[in-house]
Image 1 (cartoon, rainbow, N blue to C red):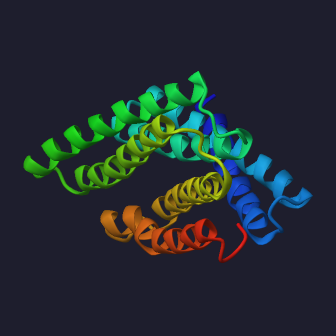
Image 2 (image 1 turned 45 degrees about the horizontal axis):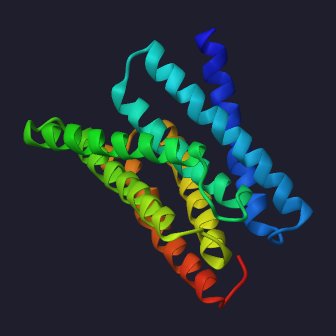
Length: 211
């Protein structure tokens, strides 16, 4: 059973990467973009949930925490596309609460690990925990201000979905580039791609380009 879940987990990851490529390369709002986006979301949901299952069956709190973080990125990106009026529902608040608590836990656990000299994983937890908590707190702030609509909503959809894609690329790198240092493999995709996401979303928000 576990081997089957692992196989499907890998296949879903491959499907997510392929769908992400089509979604990014197609006309936004078009049929191909919507369909590839739906495939990407479903594939990533399976990747995230199966990762949580595997991390529970073979206890691995580190991978469980990273799985929660990855799921939040895709969840909020999907919700930004689906909730056009920009008004959060209880579903969104629940997701925000989970990521807030998870982010705090990752920061605390990571800080403890760094102080104890436990290698690369605590540093990775600090980085991902900081990003996750920052995103969750920004969501709470935006919800308090009012509906997240227009270009801001599109920008959020873009940044979160691309963030989820970074998570998938990272997972592939961890498996296939195990001979490289852990920090390079785990954080390299984030360091390289995140500036491009900021640049793209900033241009979308300003109206310089279409998403």
